[in-house]
Length: 241
Image 1 (cartoon, rainbow, N blue to C red):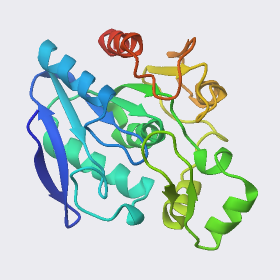
Image 2 (image 1 turned 90 degrees about the horizontal axis):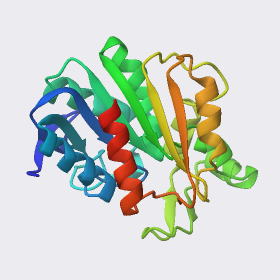
Image 3 (image 1 turned 120 degrees about the vertical axis):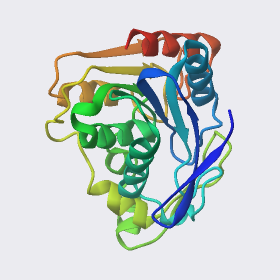
């Protein structure tokens, strides 16, 4: 799992790439997360064992990549993902896996990939959390350019949301209209997720125009879905795609 670096937009992005058969698997981590997370590394190791092409990456301002997190946006990170796919992925088809915020990003990436998109797999996908994830008081603070901080149970306390990120995210909301993705989509969500309501995956399934869309709810599963059984289920879903 050697980390390499690719320069795009004047910044070095950290990534790991395994050469192999297609379709290639690309994993997009969540907010303030990186490619060293348990799900990302499990997917990469599975791809190595299966001799399948795989790409992990850190968004700018995250993990080992250059940049300031305060300057990051969905639009910028989407473009970084697409640049890395274009530069490093050899396979014609791409399976994009997105965790939490990465599940919103995978939709933006998937639409940009067009015919190259083979399938999507969302893990507690969180599209439009700039809308449903904040109170009106917080939204007014963000509109005014103020950074807000919230308690987080996963190691980043307090967690910042910068106005630049939120305002760009609002411009990339998807759930209130049809999402023009026809490739197969699998959505995995824990029933006990207190960060991203399970209903979000059902809303997403309704918004997608394609017919090959399946939602799997995990009884007892939380937002992270990092238990051994959760990881095993994730890898079975990747294999099925």
